Length: 206
Image 1 (cartoon, rainbow, N blue to C red):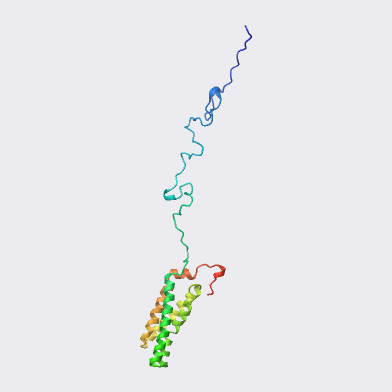
Image 2: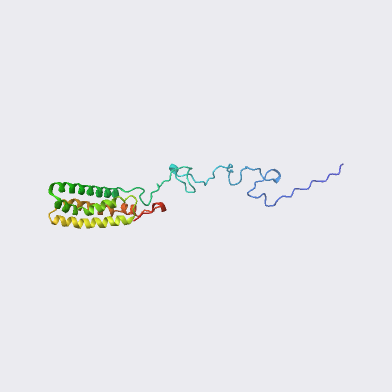
């Protein structure tokens, strides 16, 4: 009878295999991808159960941005106008029109009523010519030109009221134009336009 030695027993952990590593045959760990006691494993690269879905219409989800190239849900608005506002353009047009009308009326009155009458009419439009000169600077000028235009228009209002008191009804035209200029240049878009930031090459001269 051959000398046979009984095989020694394989030592085993008295508490069993670790809870997170399921035991395979003969106590070896289970191969990669085997189910664990807490559920089936997630395939490599697949989103987990707690991954956040992207928001609707390409909006960013709660844990990250949306797809590349998706539009921003809130459009950007500049804090200052990029082009000359309609109110400033209207004030510029009013100044040009009143100055042109005053020059035309002066020529007509001079030809029909003489130099005295034309000079009297021209005196009521002198400040309108000043406003016309300032209006040429509206596209590039700073806040000083706006303040100067408001001051000249205020003087024009006083002169217009004096002309109406003296019976010169043609002074109502520069009076109404001056009131319009004051109203338009004191609005918020006009203030933002004349106080907008500029590059060193675009610095205003007033």
